[in-house]
Length: 486
Image 1 (cartoon, rainbow, N blue to C red):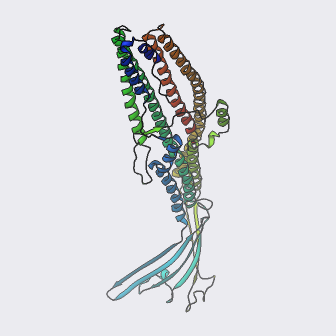
Image 2 (cartoon, rainbow, N blue to C red):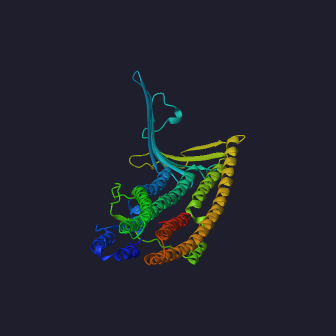
Image 3 (cartoon, rainbow, N blue to C red):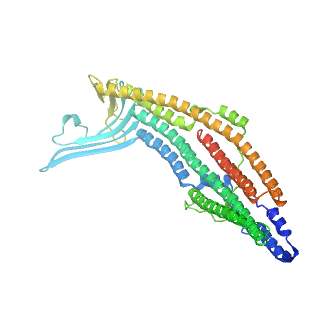
């Protein structure tokens, strides 16, 4: 952060060397300038450092809550899919009564238990009566208990829609967890960029304010020197132009800082999801140091498995879904052959198995198969092509990720080197400014040269701040590639 500067000593030197007739007036001017530059704001400032900002975003931002809900939705998808294995109670009653004739009355209640292996177990009670009852529905007066099993021996024996639904839901749950990482990663990248833009705007405002104070002090000093005959009046014109220019830059910096703060407000929320706004006296942290060295950056890059990054995993999970779909569609090519066997028992009193015999049963076989299987073969071919596309997409994304990582890493290498150079330039430009100021104090330089040196010093400071903010944004983008911002 830019530090307050002292009053240019050359101005005080020239003011102080005026004749004794103006000594008291000069003392008042010097005291005025000292107060102007040394008095700082007494308003207490509170800092919003980067780590505190990051914690608040991760804790309270609505998008982070939405990301958590995405995981919950994925978990409930598994619960819903497992519902296909829920036991099911059923009851069916039908009858016909006409002109006091009981044509028929049918009653059937039962329990069906699906299983993971595709076999369904059934049990129930059936009681039918009536004058015109279909003989196949005839039961004893006390009804019939039955229990049985239905087994697929063709399509659905090794894999069916029930198992496909559950496996797909499990993949969806993984995708939801991965999606959460991607959502949080994206919102953090936006938040990081906004914070460092706010940091940049604040630091530039401090530099612009510093430059304005330099120009104001110099203008007042030159004007007083001109009134005292110590310098030509034309120097006041140059000093005034410089003052107006610095004032313009300061106003622009103030607007930029306000706008950057407004953008940052988008990421500030309470625990009740109420938006917050920065207080006027809130400022960012005062420095921006690089998070890595050239060596540590290379070392960390070498330990990252690009094929397991969330960006790539999202497509990997889609491929897993397609493989489940392919397996199911392969199963559709088989003929449908289901066998059902239900032993029957007439209850006696409270004993439903008193008359149980293996010779009493209901038995059934259902079989079917399309002749050409065009629907099934076409669907399977489509899924195979989708799998091929997903596989190619994974290979492309892995390579794209590697190249983007290399580009960003090279940019960071360059940025770290540029920062080192820029810091040296700031120090050297400050040395030149101090040297020029000394020469000006003893009358060997001009106001123009002092202004030039001072302008260069301020510009180098501005450039340094820009590079620092850009460096932190580049570091965030590099981490964003691997979803490691949190």
